[in-house]
Image (cartoon, rainbow, N blue to C red; front, side, top):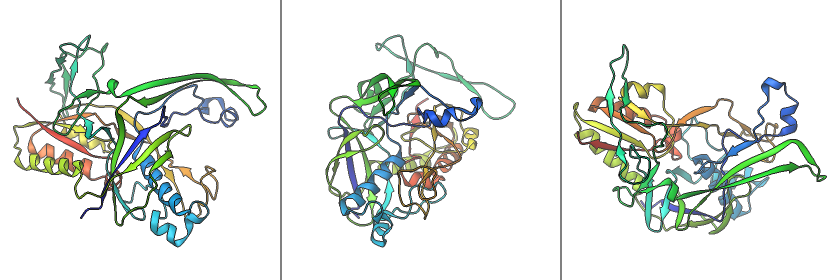
Length: 369
């Protein structure tokens, strides 16, 4: 059934996707006890939008096209179109006509670039050396270390086509833009403690964001310029004709085939091609990992929500109380043996609500020893 669409988002200039670390409201923070204040002067955005941001954008654009934004977003027709609420970590229900999202990725013309990290280091870009690891016997669980790792040099995040072609380091795709200044109040006077430094991103020429979305009926969108993220970031919005299968469906099929054909002496790399919500148990089945984490909260919308201008108000919205930590895209889990591989895959796939909106996708690579 052709019910999946490719949506392309091309930034127009700089963009800013915030996370857990924000400037906050200075007046609110100063009213708190000193040890409870969270005043940040240096804030750096994220390279990619969160999947929850993409979901919210789609729901907003569907309603905007129909003229059903607040307060009409609670009408029966609006609920059928965009659902009653946003992401819920305990539910994998659809969101109106939106059934499912797939991970955000980089588009370069007709090429889809997904995480394709290699463990290589050197002092320059010439002749990078492959890092190696050895096992360390410990009392419980698994242990290992990289034998030739140099903490003074980073390991590049790399992106490539599903086949591994067109390998590109992140530095060739993303560029940064830093804004330094002093905040002023509405009367034009400089506020106290108002120095700030904000780092935004932009995509280099020829690159865009893209993701697939699955709908249970044909969606109606207006292609053009949309707002998404912080500072009213602008993006060119485009949507394709429907297709039956995405590259992520192909990756899932390839993963299943590798698992079925594996045995207990095989070694594997599991490359995370999206941020992933996993339990600590996943590391009990890994030899080791090279990973980073990202803080995650989502917006909570209730049946009483009638507007989105106020946070923590009876008729507004709120942030989830519990902060989660997700393994970031381009992290690698190293696994030995079929049973461990199956268990790691099951743990990642078990987070149904996250998988349903484009988190918890991975690619298995069998290693030649």
